[in-house]
Length: 204
Image (cartoon, rainbow, N blue to C red):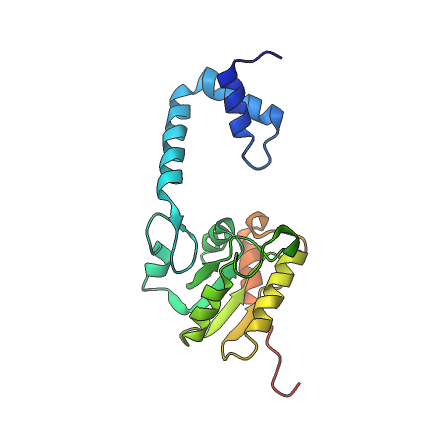
């Protein structure tokens, strides 16, 4: 099919979105051009602003246009309880439950030696430094219950076995192989309530 070069470029750009194939990208492009040009312009401006101005929080690595994000700056939250997550979308899922009043640390991925993703890429030294400061009472490992997520949680727990911080792992309610962004709020809240410790007892 001979398409306008600009239309083809738009379709190709839309395919950068997760789960969007050629047909879906084509439908989106045609919809924006035929029925919602004002929405298309608004989308382009918002996307440009976001790309240029959103970075990451210096403390928790969540997406933020400020050096310290709103969650980390919130004095009403319990900064001694840190929830470790794989991605900002997981943080949004937890926040929507309204059942967690601690703070977060976003890994932006999981350990994957094949893909060249190790502890440095996940900012684990920064996380361990926060624990070493002595102001953390509990570290909740809420990585996804996938093979990679479990391996990442296990690695973090092993590295902190000698620390005094209580290390827990969300367990109940989240299906193995599932991802947090697709779990409903009630199930996720139950998973947090039923988290378990990953630290070995002293008499083992």
